[in-house]
Length: 326
Image 1 (cartoon, rainbow, N blue to C red):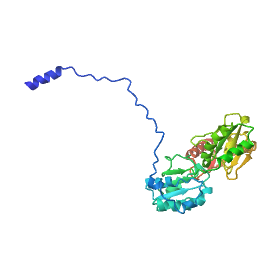
Image 2: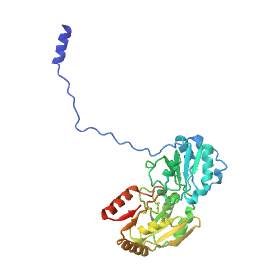
Image 3: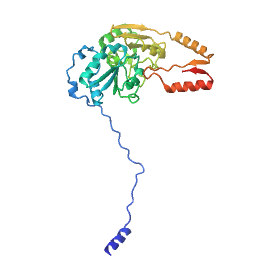
Image 4: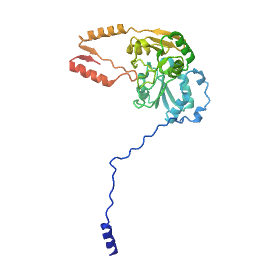
């Protein structure tokens, strides 16, 4: 009877109502850490450099310790190295160091030509059954989550005499105070260091950026377009060649462009025949209008070829009734 009486009392008690907030409180955004602790262990950072590494240029940053730590953390035993032509001479030194200090059993040196960041050859590295690809000399144009195997980019920044660069610009282009400063990724640190020094002498310095590239970096396939008046500014491009510079001059015709060679310490006035290039291109387009048989070539160097563009082009040609050979 007691249990029945207790049950009746419990049933007579009013049930509790749940109150639901119509506007749930949002969690505050986590502020990203401004300072991140270096993840490379001291045991690697304090490793005495071998005789092989001492043969590398002292002003070239191959980030040896980061490469060793990346290889060890990934437990990679088969590593592929990819370098542009100018750095290929150091590939055997890097291979020797990785096999000695990173427990690498097989180190492959890819011999295909590497023109730029779009030539990341993860397909060849994957065909060699490599566990990791280390790409030297370019930035991350192809995201690391898009490659078939894990990929590490090493920019190989080169230290140059920034004071000589500043003095050379002061001496030669003092009449124009607006400078657009750019170059290849190897000289990104020099570009950042030269900007405040030039501003101390009254120059207005702009470092353009075309994402996802780093600020000031120019590639042969990717160049930013400048929106300021062409008569008020001058371009200074830091590089030992003009391969990537031509892309910038095509995208920005009419701007006076100089190239500073950091190895010679000299400034060169560069020109590009934009009018002739457009006329040649227009002539080729006019000839192509009367053509019905086509040949399609898909670039296979690294990541240059785009299968989606190929499929779209094939569909358009089929719709137009053109004959083509792939």
